[in-house]
Image (tube, rainbow, N blue to C red; front, side):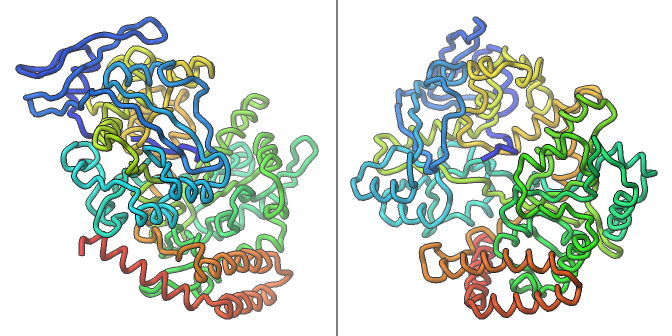
Length: 567
């Protein structure tokens, strides 16, 4: 997974500051301070402590070694260095007497998990999606409940809301720590629009507020017949990387009453009920608008079949008028603008506010959605010899100090002090360092579990301290545009049936049908044909059993809402 995310509070800022500045604990603590040396020969403070009497919390340092298995076939280590060979892991080892051995599933994760359960050979810790396989391991009695631990160790419970905890409880218990969770106060998301700012100025910088404004602007681009290296500019470029055609465009957001978190389910919330998305008149209007753009050749015609590198090549050469993605607008545009500006100093892209049609509150236009439950879950298995000790270590990582050090390295490498909010004041960018130098520090490699608030707020604070011309484009786009237009979708988490069940197989079939039909709709040769295909698609979906899925998903959604409210 691309880490678009980051982290936030457990130890007080004063404790973080005292540890980072080399100060000992205040009156009566049991800590013994010593020093270790990082790869640059700089000393940093370690604390061999088991308790403090000043109200702050110090974690245990009894020796523990444990194994982590990532249940993904794609997993590879972020760094080629072994444990103890980089600054971060050496800091953890010296201060907490912890040693971690990580591995991936190395093959089909489902098959691997079945073998591990059957042979009772599970690793100490599993990192996996919160889906049917995770529930299977819990039901097999192989996962340790951490309810008692989260009450004893402070960081996790201080950051993860009761609503979020309730949402992923199984049989009333908590079976793991969320990885890259976020608070409700930090909406995350990278969906939205960017415009070719050089072209925009050439064409008179017209108003871009509604979908009608967008349509008129795209017509203007096409009629300008401006070329780059003899090739025409594509007026509108959708994101070719998105698997679902619904995520290649975010036009539906302009009509209001929309949560992108429902896209993977092909649902829309109409009058308080989840129903097939094309039963929503606003989705029908959206589909017809996209069809109009295709018919008038205002969208790249190959968006459903072209390769990612083809899209990136156009962005890098300034051949895109408007770019849009419901998944990640910022990353491809950031890369493209760097290449383009290197060849043309005037070449640039600008993230813009999303479109909002007349009568729609622009502050409630959502081009992204986020879940407070983050990415996946870190669960301790029954095979672990000392599960509480492992949890205590993970809880420290989840704290402000843990996030600070595991993500940014120990003090003295890229930061020396913290600001008034406890965020690091960076002395240099990690991205100015070579890959080898970054590996020697171990940035982010052991940020397990991650908490998005601290990391993201830290990078925003650091970015604001820079002169405007030196600020990071991605951070500016996120903090000023995309995060503001992201809505919480936690209530729609885990509303699908088990993928291996009859209903789960049915859902996958209907998803594939909906994808292929939606492509036919937007590529239809006339609006009349598109309307006919919309009705055909609805009928095919329900003939295939979508009515049963509606019942399941509505029941699970209502159950989620009930769990989140503590009922």
